[in-house]
Amino acid sequence: MAGANETRHAESDRAAAWARLLVLGLVLAMLGLLGRVAQLKLHPDAQLLQAVTPPVSSRPEFARRGNLLDARNRLIATSTMGYRLFVDPSQMVDAPTLAVDLGAVLGEDPIEIDKKILQRADRQYVVIDHLLEDWQVAAIRRARLRGVALEPRLVRHYPHGSVAATVIGMVGFEHTGLGGLEHAFDSALAPRQGRLTYVRDARRRVLWIEPQGYLPGIEGRDVRLAIDLVIQQHAEQRLRVAVEKHNAGGGRVVVLNCRTGEIMAMCDVLNTRPGWDQLAADPMRDVQPALGRNRCVTDPYEPGSTFKPFIWAVATELAKAEPDEIIPTPTEGPYRTSRGRRIRDIHTHGPVSWRTVLVRSINSGMAIVAERLSHDEMREAVSRFGFGAKTRCGVPGESAGLVTTPKNWSHYTQTSVVIGHEIAVTPVQMVRAFSVFARDGTLPDLYITARTQEDEQYRFHHQVVPQSIAELVRQVLREVMIEGTGRQAQSQRYQLFGKSGTAQLPKPTGGGYYEDRYVSSFIAGAPYEAPRIVVLCVIDDPDKSRGHFGSTIAGPVVRDIIDETLTYLGVPPTKTPDESLVAAQH
Image 1 (cartoon, rainbow, N blue to C red):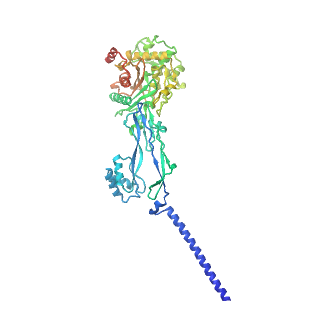
Image 2: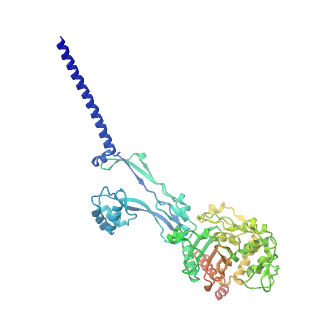
Image 3: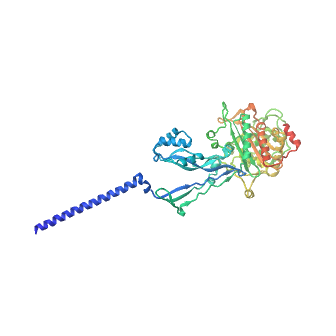
């Protein structure tokens, strides 16, 4: 009996031992299985990589950035689809061989391609060429090289090259606006990219697409500008000729539709002169013209005598002087103000009418009447025409100009501003203010985008001076073209009304002015009876040995642009043959 019990105990112990071994084996097997699963999950074999990847893929569906169009719907900027070429070094067999193959296909140096690959051999994305030509794309697709792929990308084109470059700006690597109007209208131009999500097989072939798997892209909105490429191109060419002819540091032109406030052209030229202390500079423009600042809105300048009509108009409205009143300007020597300040004229005239003061651009006459205005009245006259405030025309980077604060306004300021000194304005401010005389005395809003009839219908214009005053000033400015400083800028086709300005160039540091360096300008409107446009030309720092008066170097630029623009717009000539003959003699 005892032996039987011992036998049963021995068998029970063996069974328990085997059970423990079996459980241990199962535990080890499970641990091994879990380890294998983890290994496959975290570091799958290359052969299993495709199998463990989720069978759902997606790809972007590109949408185009909106077009920039000129006033007549010509393309200024547009986007097309291009392709970038990249290599995945982990997929290629041999880098030198691939470089040779790519060089043969692309027509490029295989050594340079090999360098690009080896420099980033540890990456899976090595760009070989950011933008391929169409024939290169076709060749790559035919070659079917392992580890080589094409990536679609949007490409921005500017069909007219550098025309209006500082106005238009450019887009960056991500196809977003970097400067100019590309930046200003980026939210309108930018597209919404779509996406296609689909189920695929192990060979990455599409099996099916769920309805909700397709999100279409939405193209950006087109923006039509007020800029007219024909007017812009002519203005740029004419300005560039004048800047080079007078060896100037630069030049600016703005052409404005004074009826609608649309900016039809905006030009900005810089000229590097070896050996000169260059005061007008733009380092970013040297990197890329489209990255340069648009000095027509960013850089104020002292307008000189072109500022006189604004103060003349307000002083006349306030009855501080009547048009035919005789103003006691000096017969000889400089005029001395009530505080003893000297005001010089190029030529002395003796007592003349208030009308003649503007026609002949007599500084002393302007200063005499300026002392009849209070400081508040003078400041109000300046702000009334929009100076000291941005025009908000839609061009980025706009400056408000420089106007002396009420606290610092002095007798010196009072007698300086009236002749266009101690005040700085931008070209866009000037053409807007001058439009008051081309209109019914109202100040227009400015626009870089094209206007519609509906826009015009609901627009409100600020009345600056009475219509009678605006018409009187326009009449006097017509006399400037016939009897005054504008004679050398007369047109043989159209009756112009305008004003010249020649201001000393202020020193960038330390205050004061250069004795022999200037900012020369001319502004005019036309046709006289029914004005359509206002044109301003500013010549920055011309070489005095080649001329420096605004009437002689900026005036002809304005005249030529007016002639070309009005002819292009289909406006018939407004001068009689006799008037044209007189203009030709000047």
